[in-house]
Image (cartoon, rainbow, N blue to C red; front, top):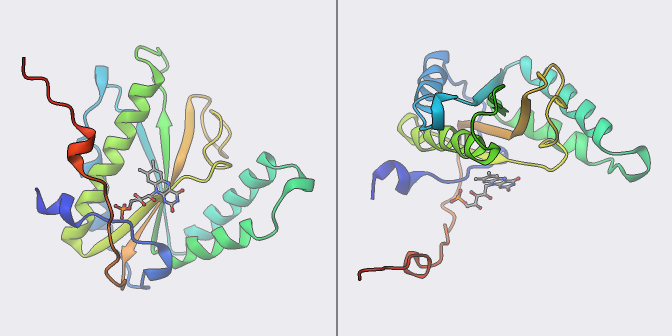
Length: 187
Ligand SMILES: Cc1cc2nc3c(=O)[nH]c(=O)nc-3n(C[C@H](O)[C@H](O)[C@H](O)COP(=O)(O)O)c2cc1C
C-alpha cells in the first residue's frame, strides 16, 4: 500500500498544536487537491481557507448558518461554542464546497464524488508535511445550494476540513476485512 494511504488518518482539532502552517505548504496541498479526477472536466471543488484571525469570520458564519437552519426552539446552545472552539484549535480550517456545473452536464453525485476525490488528495498529502486533519460534515452546515453566506446559487457546502500540526496518541484505525467487500468474478 502507498505510505500516504497507510498514514492518512483523522486527526481532530483538540490534538492540534498552535504551530502555524506556511502558505507555501497550504498552497501545495490545494495543488494536490486540484489534480483530482472529475467527469467532463467540471473541476467542481471550491475551498475557502481560514487561518489566524480569519477563523473568527468562519465562526461567525457557522453561527449564522446554524441559526438559519434551526428554529430557536430546537437550537442546542452548545453547538455554536463547540464549533468556535474547534475552529480556533485548528491552525487551518477549510470549508469545502461543491460548485455545481451550471450546465448540469453530469449528475450531481459525480460532482460530489469529484469533490471527495479532491479532499482525499489533500488528506493523503498532509502526512508528508507532518500535518493531520479531518473532514467534519455536520448536517446543518451541509445544506442547500446558496445557503452558505456569500455562496453562489450553484454552490453547496460539503463540510469543514480542519488541519494542522498535532500531538495525538496512536489510535486504532479499525477496518473490516477488504475481502468481505470485494467479489471476484473470474468466469
Ligand atoms: C465525507 C466524510 C464526512 C465525515 N464527517 C465526519 C463528521 O462529521 N464527524 C466525524 O467525527 N468524522 C467525520 N468523518 C471522518 C470519519 O469519522 C473518519 O474518516 C472515520 O472515522 C475513519 O477514521 P480515519 O479517517 O482515521 O481512518 C468524515 C469522513 C468523510 C469521508
